Amino acid sequence: MNRRSTPEADAQRAIVQALRIALPKGAIVHHCANEIAAGDRRGMIRQSILADMGVYPGFADLIVIAGGRVLFLEVKSQTGRLRKSQAVFRDTVCAQGFGWALIRSVDDALGALADNGFTSRVRPARRAAP
Image 1 (tube, rainbow, N blue to C red):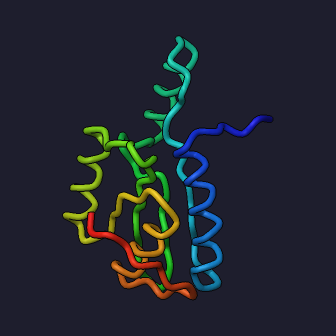
Image 2 (spheres, one colour; image 1 turned 90 degrees about the vertical axis):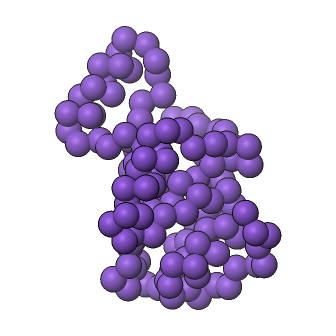
Image 3 (tube, rainbow, N blue to C red; image 1 turned 135 degrees about the vertical axis):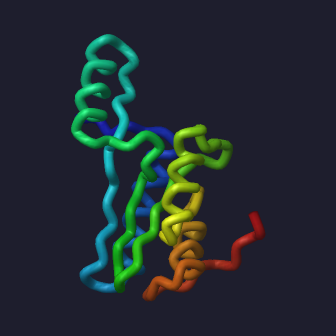
């Protein structure tokens, strides 16, 4: 099976590896595959089935659970933008008191951990203000 290679997918793989190193033992880093890329009839049917099974539009790419905290991470390429459903998801989880961050790199991910009070074994590099 060939891995999907896009700037966003490559960044996400690097971020997941870094989070697994940085977070304490027992932390959970989970990717919820919530969309079907195929736009053909078969893909649309599969997407409909997933929606009936509880897939939530705009759900974040990664969920981090550690030390009683939950953080949702939306991974984007350097030029990627949030879709409307992703912005609605962000607003919904933030209104409920959960952490959410848009990340484009490993340093962004490590910074998001620090910004949201997660214990980390790795310190992020200095980040430029968004």
